[in-house]
Length: 219
Length: 250
Image (tube, rainbow over all chains, first blue to last red; front, top):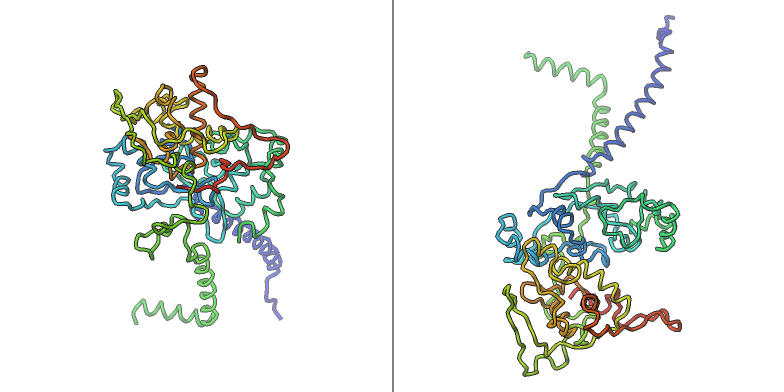
């Protein structure tokens, strides 16, 4: 009986195993990169807002503290979006005729909130609380980046679970003194490893097992 | 038979060789796994986040305003001096409030018949520290680092507020500063929604400290209360600046 396969088929079979594994690896790599890509996470995408509000101007140039507008960041899960009255504290007097601010004045006149676009949209199965993070030494710029340089705010981190966990596993790498929480220029390299560990102890940050337990964030 | 029909028949012939059912199963599997990746039911659950738009309520706001006249537990605000900075009999006195107008058109009060003279909270180092921090968030933008009225927003064109360092405001009772923060004055809007009452008192204490710092010989010192005595280290002052127990936003 004639051979069904040519004897080169042995090599083809062996090579195809290697190629299949390689292809699988490539496919996995491509998937992992696509899943982390800014296309899917919305990272670096500036959002068009109803008012051309510039964080760069208000915090970077004018030096207004984050908490002037985001008043509830120390006490609540939400940092707080300021009511239009807060804008009018200044803009009743300065730039009061600017056409850029007409949506703000309209909102104030008609008592209708400005419909800002949410930039950092966490999935709703994840629980996040601003107040505990600022109380334990996580500064604004650690997650939000240098807001004081952004004319239009964009997301600088992926907001994916692996990103959350990278800090929950090793908080001492990211925390800073409480006096520097709202400092946008804070450089993490200013502290030695010992000082960071001391901060972690001072703030009574709990151990990794608690911080990475499922129900810490999925509750 | 047209060319297209001929091609179709070739394809269907090939399909039948592969097995139409197998093909259908494959398509279904691929289709299901693709569409499963596009569902956001868990990301966007049917509940409201803070500040979200509501399709249900007529004012489009998911966050509801309190019905008028509602008093939430712990928000009764019986302590008039603490929550308004005014005396018990405020508004009933017949003494008119005297006002003057300065060069830049600001209306200035020069008599304060209703405002309380004494701090309704113990003045401690902690209170002053808290006041300094809050001053540098909310007040420094216009009133400037030492209260001369040369803050960044004034340099940007906001009308200049009066300085803290003249006899009129050095002699003004503490209740006046609290009242201005609570209700606004002149071109300054109310800060009641941004600064809770306990923090407003902390800021008043810090303003007094600023005034003394610029005029150390001419003013009496702050009525400081020592904290941290050894017998009762855990006692919290009745209006601890960190405690929002005495009233949240307004």
